[in-house]
Amino acid sequence: MDPEEAFVAALSSCHMLWFLSIAAERGFVVDSYTDEAEGVLEPDSEGRLAMTRVTLRPRIEFSGPAPIGKEVEAIHQEAHRKCFIANSVKTTLTVEPAVPSP
Image (cartoon, rainbow, N blue to C red):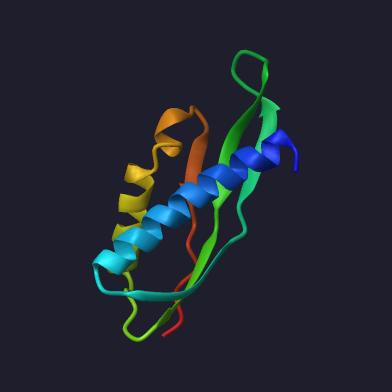
């Protein structure tokens, strides 16, 4: 794993751990959580190479009742706000969750 992959993995893992914690607090049971996270390495506004964008694409499967619509979106937003790694970088971070299965 190179440093760029580790950076993307750290952001993905931080979001995942917060999501799992928040979902559990709200009584949801997560069966699986996968993320096809992707980062873009390119010159920044000062011409230096940087990880300018990271996109997380989590896919979550629940057993039993699952959060839907605005509820799952709210969990992702809270996870993003609580992720100290996301709060520590200049990189633009986008979360594009897959719609959970019923």
